[in-house]
Structures are given as C-alpha cells and as structure tokens.
Length: 164
Image 1 (cartoon, rainbow, N blue to C red):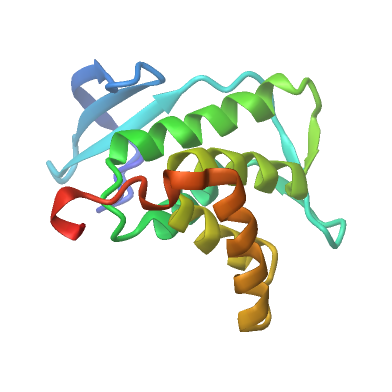
Image 2: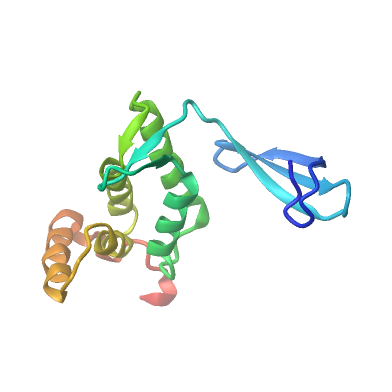
C-alpha cells in the first residue's frame, strides 16, 4: 500500500480488525520509509460496476461519492456515523446485487433517497434538493408536502433531545 505522506510503495500492517458492521476490515499501517501511520479499509467488491450518468458519461462506481453526499445531507442532524455507514453499505450491496455491470446514476440516487427517507426526513429533503435539482422555493415546499404525507410523525426523527 502506497504511503499517503511520502508515496513510498511499502507499508506494514500493524493492526487489523473488522468494522462495527462487519462490512470491511480496518487496517492500521506504518510506512517502512518515513514511519508515518495511516488507516486503510478493505471491502468486498463483487464485480466492477460502471455508473451511467444522465449525459451518458460513464465512470467507475465510487462508494466514497455516495458516502460524501449522504454525510453532507446528514450534517448537523445528530445521526450516528454508524447509521450513515450502514446506509451507504446497503446501497452498495443493492447496486452490486443488481447483477448488472452498468447501473444508471438515477437508480443509485433513488436507492440513496429511499435510505435517507427511512433514516431522517430533513436529510432526505436536503439530498433530494440537489439530486432532483430544486430551482425555486416552491419546489422545496411541494416536495416537503409529500414527505409529511409519507413520513407522518417521522419529521423529527434523528433530532436529539437537546434540539427538541
């Protein structure tokens, strides 16, 4: 594994353990050249998946992009990191078990939205505002109205006691 600090190609594994949800192996490594320590994660990849964008561009599936989007949508919502990781792992599993080598980005976006809808209604609306490209306040209003209908009392789900 290449060192992120000095780019040396050799590092030693100092510690390995599974993540809390058992979907990856966390490895602590030490560079044999500069001595810096860093962490890597090893995950199972069933097949190489290509994401087909709306403009027909193609790029490799990247779990980190989903994780970044979900984390941003959940920011300041009091949602545990473990819940976010579970959601992202669930989406990744769904994509991999579709059995397709090419998956439209629209399908992945819908999977993420469904996961967020169940996790937190505010994060769901935040993600939808970017994913569905809301342009005006009435777009938010119309979408939020549908969320109230679907989520019912779940509108405050994810809010901590301190925030109530």
